[in-house]
Image: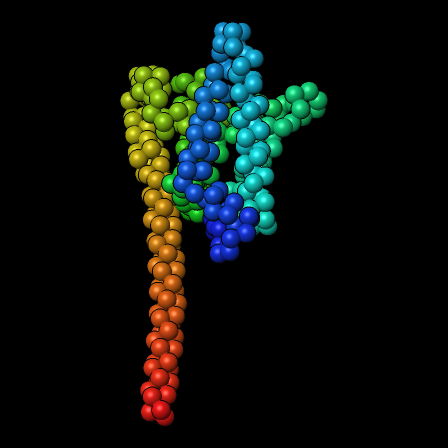
Length: 281
């Protein structure tokens, strides 16, 4: 992931002052407040009775929030210039706000329904949520391997279930597709006993030899592997960022020590020059 946008400019230009304002805590809290308000208004718009009574007000608030978000992004682009477009979260914000500007009529009108994605800007506005999403993205390679393993288990189990129990419970195991869906339902433990296992056990008493191992492997083993990969990714990301912060702190300490050493040397030279002046006098 790209580094979070920072106001590295140490000067006092308008752009640098604006960058510091944007990264300040009050400004960030104000943006979060607007996002939460937008989430509430978008939820209220789903109520037909509220829209009948206060539809005009809700639409006005929505347009005002859209203008506020657009102005905020414009300020960010002005303050950070090309650095803004190098940050994936900046591109994400730009896309979700840009979708809301799609006209309500025309071939792209369906995208207007995606304006609720503006609520997802809360992820980019809250650092802890960004960390979780970054960790999940880092975990994708490991999760891909687990998904491949789960796919193999499901396929083998579905073929077996179709051949073993297709005639006993055809509405659930009649075809390979039905078996795959039923096995997914078993993995989630949603009414697996009453709707699936017991009807088959009534005719096939040894069917538990299939259902119990499948549930144990798919639910308690494979799904926990997903959790383990994500937790490990979060810990690795935290360690990387702590290491980067420690290196930055050491670099700043080294720079401060170098400045202090240079000042001491300059002071020694001044003292030596004073002594020579006194001695010459």
